[in-house]
Length: 270
Image 1 (cartoon, one colour):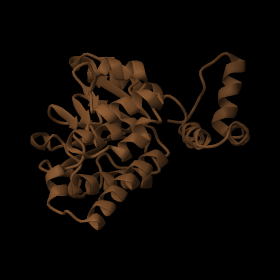
Image 2 (image 1 turned 180 degrees about the horizontal axis):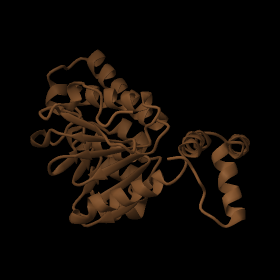
Image 3 (image 1 turned 90 degrees about the vertical axis):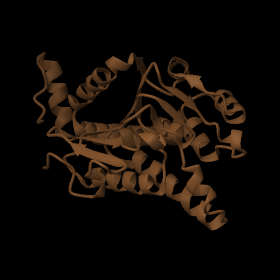
């Protein structure tokens, strides 16, 4: 177990991404390009992928928080960088890289929480939608406004349409209009909205609630949750039943049920 992330370019104070790990196994990945609105440049995508890979390799990891420094959470892809390489092959590679990252977040065994303090637009909004949970400041706003520059936010639409109702997603994609944090909560894009000064406490409260639960059950549950969403209902029930059976066979579930019967707190290992 390590108290900080392994040495890498992502840990330097002047890096585009800061990666820290506390003694509880909570990895915090912080976008650190506030002047550039924390865009998903090639460097940022590479750093975030490396950090997610490090979490996946950490058997003691319990949770990930994705945060940002500055006024913007993430303003999407770096349009200047994209405009400098006007070749189809480059664009295909860039968007494939971003899609791999989003899927890597989904495939992590541990939950991922977006701590959204400001603007989240285009691929930045996609990232919020891709995270398992999201807590937002009431100062945050959300949009998939690529259409404003003639670029329909197709890949952000994949994650967005799996969070909110299709017609709501399509309206955002077609108009480029932004929604407030409270509207994002009402539509299901974020879980909680709090004042800016309460954001850290709200994220920490959610972290503590999750850390109090057994890692094995959460890992099984997260994997099943997303698998069943993409299949028919009969197959979903088959998958869910098998997962619950395997989960019930775990020591943590046996202890939890016995503790309920004994009317005591379960003695799960930390």
